[in-house]
Length: 278
Image (cartoon, rainbow, N blue to C red; front, side, top):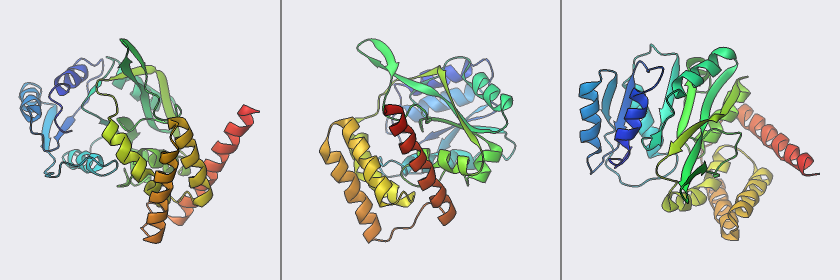
């Protein structure tokens, strides 16, 4: 996390007050220039299970699928191998007091569940409401949790734009289920930023290529995203990214077999939505 002094203390308080306390919390400071590091250190001194980790990053850019994943792996490297479930959480969240308890229960009830998470709400016009920036059947990257078996099977979080969609598709490829808990509401104190959205639009096409969507599915996905945002420029931006990656022969983030499965999964999803609209 970077420059989260306004939120990180409240986030850590929401962890400390959980009905089920985690065995270890590794808080990664990503080159913050405010009091983020000072706040994290104050909690680590008071609570032995909270650990301060420095990302070592010097860049100030915020590109989806790069710094976030690098910071995650800095925390991951600081852990021991003795874990069953890993949670990836952003520093500006507020967890309900039973968050860990509910997620752990979801894994215990069905051992086929490999990835689980709650849903994100933001404050809008004085009311907490669902932040509609992603399919409700997918788990936001800000609050992912994985079983060890699933995490190892999918090869961990892959260092690419779209990682938080890719992980779920690869998990399904390996026979795991994805569990969204719609009643487990997590409050996001800092809604997704405008700059991030702009960068994301420019990089999404690159992600489609790297995830091996193929041209047709990429066109459909770009059109859907453009329609949702009511901006035709989004479509052209996404496809521009796709064709640039194609012309550069960028390396794929998936194997040939995984790519084939992903295209099948996306086709099924498109056909399913078309049937529902009839």
